[in-house]
Image 1: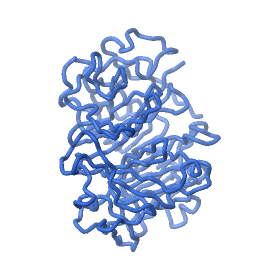
Image 2 (image 1 turned 60 degrees about the vertical axis):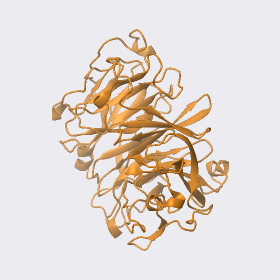
Image 3 (image 1 turned 90 degrees about the vertical axis):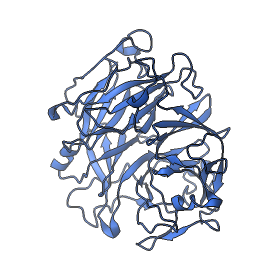
Image 4 (image 1 turned 45 degrees about the horizontal axis):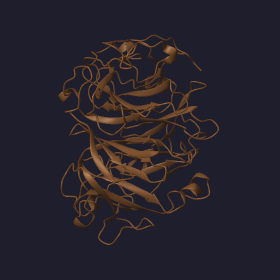
Length: 462
């Protein structure tokens, strides 16, 4: 691996939450001192090390940069968004993947052993192209999925070509491509629109252990969805069945669905049948390219299928506590994080502006704004990533839920600034903890003013 020089820009405030400063060999990502304020801007020349941490043991280095890819004649439109690793298979966690959230979307793979970064799929622009790839998740059966954060509100359904979910079936072996991008550039990538998933403005996607897939509609008034495959999930994992061959999609509803941001008991209301076709009264659209799909957003505004509206839901994250699964969801416009108990089917508020700021002991207030992405570490701790302006107020918050009961109201609980972004004009995206190494994580620096998006590796040295 190409190992650039290593240095760290570090800020430490107060006493580490673990109680004492630990030697690096015993340090966890949860051992940090909450930062009192956001980081100021760093110089462009220092954007390879843009993060201020709350622990002096955390190190950072840039492992992928857009300008390096362009110099190497590799297509790269930037706006690095979500990140994942190959979480299964013989080379588990050797590769990390990210996607380009632009009007010219693509998929990028970084080889952690060789240090090579390649674009392995890039839209050609044909038939309206592909836009706003945001989701980037590894499936339990060993493929990569991404999806477009783009859909339209229309009473009778949209004919937009976007709002699609795609599966890259050979993410490890798909060859890197070079400029110019032509109709043949993606010939080595098995990239499929999985049309059984209804159209919406995608971002967060998560799978539970039963095989259900959860997704959102990123909209002020967007809904939460669940897709349940018809196939036996064990057969899917074994490669004996196709997860997307048939399945049913549901929307989450609290009460009658007419109270926005509702909490309490919820139900899953179906709007497709078990084969994936729209139920009577649900909306089927034909887009401008002649592709017929179920319209999730506009269907779940209809009375028979009404879903509960949340204010711009974005990311999702599964947390497992004593074998029980909980699904966390950010809502950017209301500055909230919700928690769904998938067994009891109840939704509650996990964090909001009334949550205690661990640096001050007071409600966090407007210091928490635009929660966007979520991440979970090896200890099951939740991290909240803001969509704000690097160099001004773009932070990652650590949620200290000491007893993992799904609220932050017990003594000593709250949220604290875990890291702050100094790259001007950018935002943190795609924080992801290495599934095989509890001392390593990655985060993207998206759309800095310099135009040089980066993937930053975060480590705790041994």
